[in-house]
Amino acid sequence: MKAIIFDVDGTLAETERDGHRVAFNLAFAEVGLDWDWDVDLYGELLAVTGGKERIRYYVERYRPEVAQRLDFDALVKTLHETKTRHYVRLVADGALPLRPGVRALIDAARAAGLTLAIATTTTPENVTALLRAALGPEAESWFAVIGAGDIVPKKKPAPDIYLWVLERLASLGIPAADCVAIEDSANGLKSALAAGLATLVTPGIYTAGEDFSGACAVLPSLDGLTLNSIETYVSDQKV
Image (cartoon, rainbow, N blue to C red; front, side):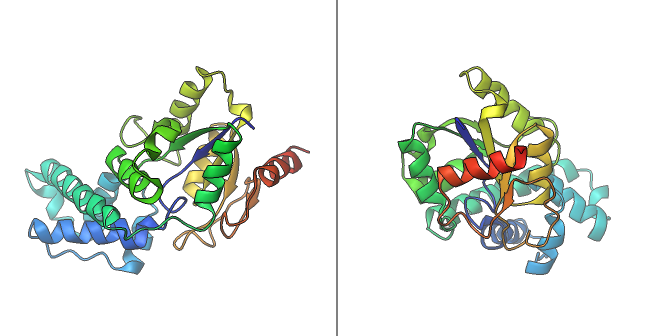
């Protein structure tokens, strides 16, 4: 193992319920919409990957009249940008701590000389805000490759974001066979597996109970996870 590729939302921190959902609702209120995404509804909407895609799905399913607005595309863009601003503020205020074991695993990987990378469909601003708030102002530099947002045409479960990250890791001399992905959802797992990656899963609040067939291991958290145990999980699956 030469590199670990982390997902962000739900993997590094429980960002969905208490971060993104709250930020979406704040954005809706700011632009004068009476929409409210409660905890259960947001769990349903998470089946769709990507914030702008999630808004469009909600409108198609629950507010079809809004899709007829001439400014609908602009509205989606404005809502997403406003939501990102609110999310970044929530993170900066310390509202979203790392999940157990995340900091220890990152520290161990850095100490061992492993390369760190990120593959996520959340926006680069969201990634940067979380890394700086939860790990430190210099944390962004710890990751050799950060794949985020709309840099690829298809979101997870498509493998595009992982393939983008792997292409850049390959230029550093690190092939996919020497990488391990860590995810929290079935969509994320499918994305990583389709890119040919050995993958560990640590389900979050919204993803517990999903189908994680193909994962090297499904762990309640990263607490106590060592680099040696990751190697063992990967080796056992290959055998």
